[in-house]
Image (cartoon, rainbow, N blue to C red; front, top):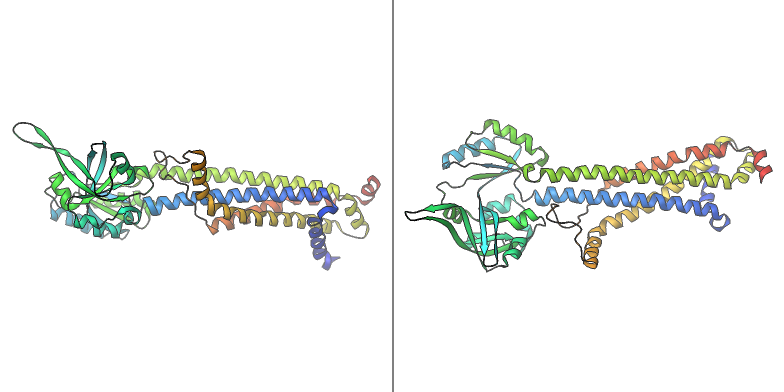
Length: 419
């Protein structure tokens, strides 16, 4: 029995898994165990893919547009001062790009309404190289700012609120005022909308506008070439530590801010939610593994007579243990395979399915006022799938130990007498 014990136990276990109609209880319990594991694996893979999608959108989309670090000054620093600051920043190998900008709070207004926004005076060519904003235009383009001095690019949500499109005019008001002998006058200028973008996050789509730097200097009456530097770094998660390192060498006339001040809490919440949801889903898989234990115990009870006959024919307790451990492993493998297939299909289609639900039931699953994006993203990670497969198989294998030992403990005489 020694050499053929393992192959024979594997063969018998495979026969038990595929008995079909010859044993309805075994078929039913095996099916329940397979479906339970498959459901747990599929949900786990789908949810992890959604969390990966959120992480990707934060890193590549939103953080592809929002500067990772911003150095600004309220003082009128000259060209030489900014050149010195630029040289200090370039000496840091962790900074990948630097883009000068003018950013000032202002107001965008039309006859349909008005809204406080952050107005950014940019160089269109530099912005296209250091930012992913050009990938999100639904009308017009960023290059139009070079050819149209008094042109403005705004987000879709802001355009809808102001009821404007490409070619319409928007009045931008500066936060500063003009002093004359008679009264204080607001500084404003009419701009032509030359582009509309949609990123999918409310902060950018409704409160972000871009004009060229010469227009910004004129509107805000700046005597300096720019008032901010927008930095991009290779490791966005190290933004705070890099900001602290730079702050030690920068003059006190400037301040440095990280992207985490605006979006850090949201990003931390996403990562925290991923950990909590993953833990809860692993508990679901553990319940499915417990269901496998119950199923195998029921199968052992149903097969007591078969076990007794095998023992009578000379099968050792180890061989009987092997039969039911192999059977549980086969059930686990089938459940995992089915679950991985369903999980991948679910992850690939969850975005479209969420949109279908929103259309059919006239609801919004993700509110852009609360979440950084207004759609359900998904990204499959084969590392996550491998981790799920290995983890669930270990749970399934561990679930076979107790029922297999109970099967090995069956006494042939007592089993045959009861049957």
